[in-house]
Image 1: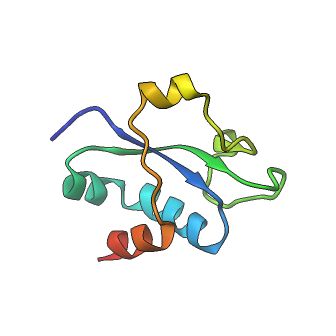
Image 2: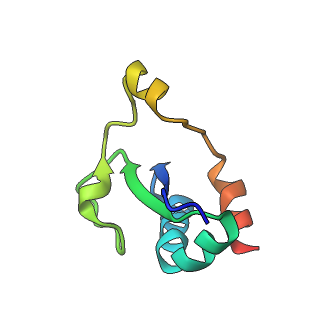
Image 3: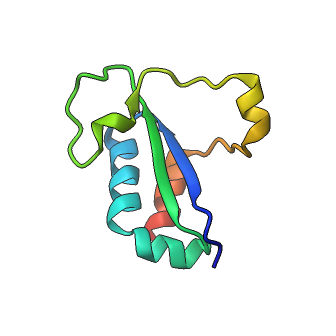
Length: 91
């Protein structure tokens, strides 16, 4: 198993995004076994940062969903359909 974590940031934390975050945290060991690497939630971009989001570290909440171009080159980023990801996580 790869030891470097797969870092994930979510765009939105409504019904689907919050469920994906919950699954990522409550089933972290199972996901790591399936993926072959630990999964780490590193940020959640939202419209209303003051809204309380149960089970999500407030330090991860941001309104800034953009990354500078240099940062895009440094990381291998993938945009994911959250609905499809949720279905895969629940399989």
